[in-house]
Amino acid sequence: MPKTAGIVLIGNEILSGKIADANAAYLCRELRQLGVDVRRISVIPDEVEPIAREVAAQSPDHDVVFTSGGVGPTHDDVTIEGVARAMGVRVVRHPRLVAALQSHYHDRLNDAHLKMAETPEGAELVGGEPLRFPTILMRNVYILPGVPEIFRQKFEAIRERFRGAPIHLRNVFVSIGEGTLAEHLNGVLADFPVLLLGSYPEFSNPEYKVKVTLESRDPGYLEKALAELLRRLPAVAVVKVT
Image 1 (cartoon, helix red, strand yellow):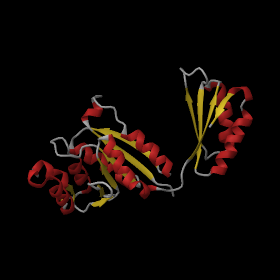
Image 2 (cartoon, rainbow, N blue to C red):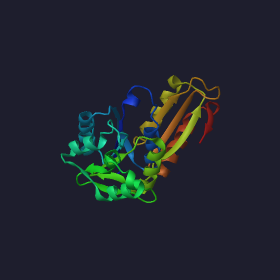
Image 3 (cartoon, helix red, strand yellow):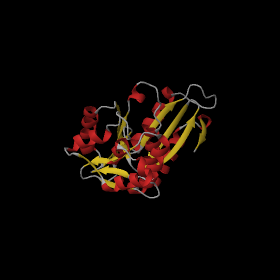
Image 4 (cartoon, rainbow, N blue to C red):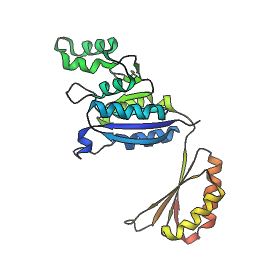
């Protein structure tokens, strides 16, 4: 059965508009290629209780959950505590992370640095190579940083854990509006009921009016559905197919 995922974005800076999130869009694209179906994305503040509530709600509902943000040495980095509370465990210092911090900071190591060695009790460390610090996995919750560059590096180190049957995609760009297009789309869905079909109007593109997406885990099924859509559409309405 295909895996499902939830994403929890943590940060007051996202909710205030100071920072535009890039991690959820990146993660959705990557997981889609791996065959994982993202079912929920939430954005919550840097507060322990909301983090705990959201993680506790998402963890049993999805095969995997990813958190982004709120890990580090400062006062507002409370994701670890929130995840620990969601799982009903204590926060502890992981010996392997302590050792890595000692190796990096030497005599400069302080309590703020050591906060980055904290994990929920019972958590695993995964994907440590080639990165200096591995990702914390608590049951089915992967705890990732909010900085996009580091977020991507850490996900790359663990991405093969999530590989399943990929979701194949075809795009059809048409010069007719959704009002005219709807009848053709409904007809395709009647013949291909498990097809994932999307329709996205484009108001500023002079070349086409709507982008239609067709998706399926079965490439043969997808190609048959694409052929049926193209058969139904007036030939002059099809701008391009990718």
